Amino acid sequence: MTQAGVVTANADETTQDRFLDGAFVLMQRRRGAHRCGSDAILLAATVSGDAVGRTVDLGSGPGAAGFAVAVRTRSDVVLVDMDAESLALAAASLRLPENAGFANRIGVVQGDIEGPVAEFTELGLAAGSADRVIANPPFFEHGRHRAAPSDGRARARMLGEAGLSPWLKRAAHLLRPSGSLHLILPASLLAQALSLMEGRFGAVDILPVHARPNTPADRILVTAIKGSRAGLRIVPGLVMHEPDGRYSDAASRILRAGAAIDRPPR
Image (cartoon, rainbow, N blue to C red; front, side, top):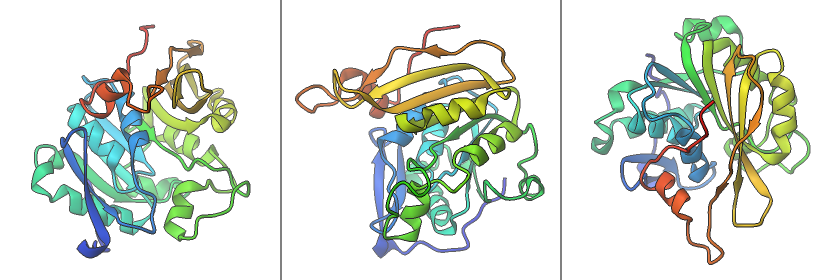
């Protein structure tokens, strides 16, 4: 696996953040960039604990979701992002002693999701080479929200003009037949995602994520199988916080103990 790290991370401008009760440590920009949080861990928790093979994290940023998959499973993980600074942070995190137990199973690749297929192939990301693809695309649609003041934050938060299309096309290209797709999305992007999955993915499971009881879901976890003809399901949702603001027991098991998100068997 190719490792990128051309840009070095300045320690004065970074933090070292512990996830999953210290199961891994992630270096992140102190300011001026999107910082990973619970969404990345929720995304990783949609991957079964017995997963093996190869997981590709598209638009990985500094690597929180990919690191969490590596900690929770025996899968190899490839972090893919176009931002050299984010990948430099990921590479620096892999050199931390706290991450030594899984660092040899993670590769770091600089690539543009909207770039040529040949470029990905040259980077070792050929068609059908992934057992699963995970992705946390930017949450805001192009032109509908004011861009963040930092270029890095803008790229992380706002989709390009083509919306989710490049993400779903690239995921379908990379996945082997019957490989799995794992997404976390804002509720506002669900319809677009489902439309783009038509003809490419089936066995779609939609899991709503609610900030508190009796509130609309603001996040959606989506899993799907490439080439499947099985139908769509809306599975029981996840409530993140109790009314008093504490994490719910289910959320705490996921965010702190590294539990998988349960879905009914098909």
